[in-house]
Amino acid sequence: MFASRDESLEIDPQDTRLDVRRVEKIAKKIASAASRPWTIMEVCAGQTRTLLEYDLRRYLPEKLRLVHGPGCAICATPLATIDRAIAISQLENVVFCCSGELLRLKGSDCDLLEMKARGADVRVVHSPLDSLTLARKMPDKKVVFFTIGFETKVELNALSVWQAKRLGLKNFYLLYSHPCVSAVCSRVLRTVDTPVKGILSPGDVCSVTGTSEYERLSQKYGAPFVITGYQPFDLLEGILSCVKFLESGKSGVKSQYERAISRDGNQQAKALISEVFEVKDREWRGIGNVERGGYRMKSEFASYDAFSQFEVDVKSRADSPSCISNQILLGLKVPTDCPVFGNSCHPNSPQGATMVSNQGTCFTYYNFRHNHSA
Image (cartoon, rainbow, N blue to C red):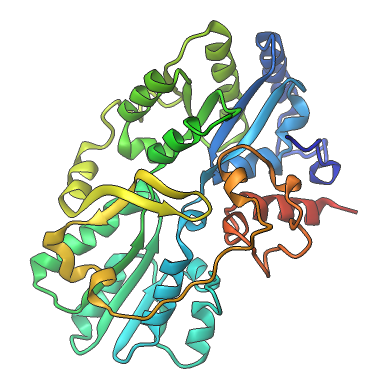
């Protein structure tokens, strides 16, 4: 089921960015704690990148398997949403705004950068509030802000919509993809024959959401959740904590940031989010429908929802049938198990969800294999 370690992903052991002695010390504790094989999933793309960048797997015992989860919001975004963004950008009188990273996000046929080259008014902005300012300055234009992200981005987007309503703006719209991390963790754990026994959850998202939902999931599935940061030692300490949970036969939630992350999270941010958005079932690219899998704008704010306010004809292609992104996202496979990985599927020609963004698992694997192969 799992590929052997890819030597081309290794880094220089003399890399001065890493305190190897400290790494080895934690790794010995992990090896001592693990009496039998375990499979742990790190959910977030930032965690995956750190594991590969520092090749932390080389320090871990063979019996410990790490698989990579679906925590890339861009990868989770349905192709139809990207195609909708491209279609809206071509409409007359539209000023289409987004972050720079979304310009090259491939739709079925092209990307927003190509639309800009063809004459569409596509602009790079740093936040939805910048788009809100544009809408106030350009009342004769329809200003659309395209945004993708987890709960850390939802708050600011909710604020922009709330502010637009307060100001009485009629020309500001949000096109969004806001998947819910805890929901997809539930989807992973209820997958038939899942090898995943414990999960490393992203600290930045939990700073907003809190840990209460993970407590519920841990109790439901009997799996431990450890909330970590993105530095090498954060991950190693998180792995150690997760192994200790598993060896004890207990489930539960442990946070490395007890002072910064509370059980209830950022209640002010959550209140703002819940005023504008509600949690609904939604499609995750590569996985399919996920129960309570994302955020949808409430009906009272529908006039700012680009999904309902722009009628465009969107016909999206399907991902390659040879692509195994669905199995990779659920922790059943790793990128090197895929027959098209590094062949017909690469960053310039992504065949599935996990290669479409530089935060995707397959993109990250490809990047490190390419950069570190001689």
